[in-house]
Every structure is written in structure tokens, then in C-alpha cells.
Image 1 (cartoon, rainbow over the protein chains, first blue to last red):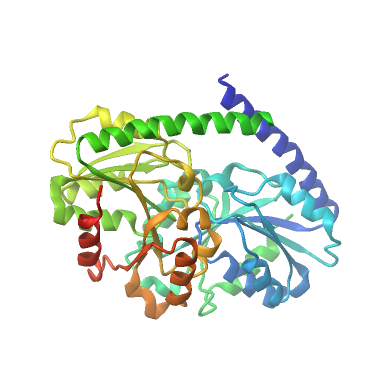
Image 2: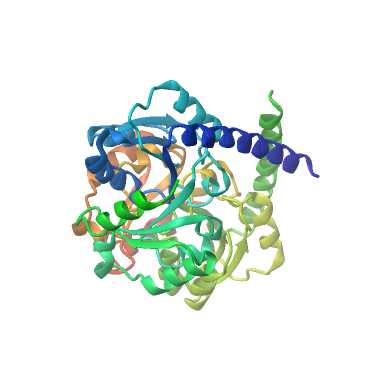
Amino acid sequence: MPEILSVKSSAMAKNDLVAAENRAWFRCRGMRALNFISSPGAGKTSLLEAMAARLGRKLGVITGDIQMTFDADRIAKAGAQAVQIETGGSCHLTAEQIRKELLARPWDGVETMVIENIGNLICPSTYELGEFFKVALLSVTEGDEKPAKYPALFLRAEAVLLTKIDLLPHVNFDVARAERDCLKLNADAKLLHLSCKTGQGLDAWMDWLSKRPV
Amino acid sequence: MPEILSVKSSAMAKNDLVAAENRAWFRCRGMRALNFISSPGAGKTSLLEAMAARLGRKLGVITGDIQMTFDADRIAKAGAQAVQIETGGSCHLTAEQIRKELLARPWDGVETMVIENIGNLICPSTYELGEFFKVALLSVTEGDEKPAKYPALFLRAEAVLLTKIDLLPHVNFDVARAERDCLKLNADAKLLHLSCKTGQGLDAWMDWLSKRPV
């Protein structure tokens, strides 16, 4: 195996081991744990604010960003328990970073833990963090060809949230095409339409989430 | 130096050497060469279509994507010379990939070569491809905090194009904040407002581009 591939493969194997530990940690506490993945600006933080307004401190959020703590501040202000990881420059979170945050505070009363990954449709898709399932967010301003272009994410996402659906009249986005491509990659994907601006779809999302077995 | 860092550093050193060769190739042919970097769906391909309609075969485009050739097809249909690199899963283009494409065809008559990088605000920022300068595209639907969050790109971009400016009335985007943060990172950055839908700003962009010395 070429040296670079072998180093990468060994780093991923180590990541997967730590992810398994994180998964055991979540399971032991009966927490539902999910991983939000999307482009930058697809609305992960806005959705987490809306969820925090409903779940309060039952929602835990570990949010990753290159730098700045804007996201955790917004989510904590909305009522959830939130912490920010500043990665410096890495393009995805790692299981080790998550483990450190899980052990660093009590997370008392958290029932749902959302890991808000770095805004990136590529690198976070293949790094397990210990979550039980992945959720992809795709804003209708990004283009309906994204599921076909970024299969690594959309074949792994158990739910796909089409966000900023209120902007649909102003953009050229073929919902049927995007959804058809999602289902080609994962026939069981749950597809939902969301707008954090109007509140459309929030009830359906919270309902699906609360019923998803952990 | 830890093994993974040393391998990464040696891979980047090799990339920089090939980038220098590409730069010499562009210079020898008197081509202006630039690197478009943005999130997925910020409008790189739409802008290249608009540029192709004006420049025709004087515009060359090497476009990268995880898979699919939608982008190159759209740009070629609009009149430019375009080729697609399907990276399989990599999150940025490399100088070696660009070199192969430069040598694989004549590129006769091309005066401006745009490398359309993989949609990603992080990984492409630090990989030189041989371009003379980088251009960041930021759509107003993505959020005004992006320059502060992704400094690696915005400190290197010689021009920042705020795209989809026609959607400004429908989103919560503080143009002054985004631009202030861009200028904090790079006081010389050229800031432009663009809408490929209405055509706003296209003349100013083409004018700036044609005058930028190579």
C-alpha cells in the first residue's frame, strides 16, 4: 500500500475505534446521537436554535468550526447545552475531539445530542464520530444536483432535510430531481422540507426525530 | 515531526513544485489563470456560463467535482473550452491533476483559464495549483459570518464575489459585516456584488478581470 494511503487508513481505523467508544457512551446514557452534515450556510445552526427553543437543556450540541464560537453561542442562547470545538483548519470533526467534549462536562439531562459537523459536503461524510445516524441538510439555494454530485454523504444520510424551502419561489431548484437522486442513493432516506424562517416542517422533523429508535 | 504531519508536509511540498511548473506553463502562454473557490452551490458554474457567453473559446475551464460532468457540460455548452476532473472523493484539486489536463489538449486561443475547484471552503484554500490568484465566491444565502469563520480562504482571495445578490431581500445577510471581515483579512481584496440571474455586477467583474495584470 502506498505510504500516504497506509497512514490515512491507520488514522481512520483509530478514529473508528474511538467512535465505537463514543457510541457506547451515548448508548449507556440512553442518548439519541446524530451528526448534522451540510455545506457551509445550509442552516444547521438555525435548525439547532429552533430545536433548542423546543427541547431546552434536553438538547446537547457539540458544534465544530474552523474558528470562532458564533454557533455555540447562538445555540446556548436558545436554551440548549452547547459547546464549540475550534478545529483550527481541519475540514471535519474526529471521534477523538468528540470524546474529549463528552468527558469534559456532565451533559446532565441531555436526551438528544447533535454533533454539528464542519460545513463541508465531503470530508465529514466518511468519519464516524459515534453517532447513531447522519442527517444531511441541503438548502434549496445550493442546487438540485448536489445529491448526485456528493453521493458519499447522501447514501449515508438517514434523513435529508431540504432547508430554506421558503426561498423556493426565488431559485431554480427541482425538488423532484433532488429527492429522486437522494432515493436512488438510499431508498429508505426520510425526506423533509424545512424552513426555519416560517417554521414549515419543524413539527414533522421533531416528530420523526422523537420516534427514531436509538 | 509526527508521521502523519511529515507525510502531509512532503505531499504539499511536491504539490507546490508541480504548481510552480503549471504557473510557468500559464506564463509562457500569456494566459491569465485563476482559481475559483467557494461552498457547494455558491454559483461558480453559473458565473462561468455567463463568462463563457462573453469570452467564448478564449475562456478555458478546468472544473473539479467528486463525480459527474454536469459543470463542464454546462460551461462547454455556453461556449468555452471546458474539461472536468472527477476526483472520486478528494475534497480539493491538486496541481498534478491540473498539469495532466493542461498537457492533454491544445487549449488553442485560451486567454483566461479558470480552475473551478471542488465546492468546499476549507481544503482547496491551501493547495496551490499554479494559478496567479484566487477568487472567493460567497453567496448571500450562506450567511455573513463566513469570512470570519473561514479565514484561510478569505485572507488569500484577491477578489471576493458576493453572489446571488438578487436574493438579498429574502435573506438575513449583513453585507457591511461580511465585507468588513473580508477587508480585515485582506485589506486589498476587490469586493464585487454579482447576480447571474439579473446580470448585476457582471460588467464590473469582467472589467476588473481584464485589467488585472498577469
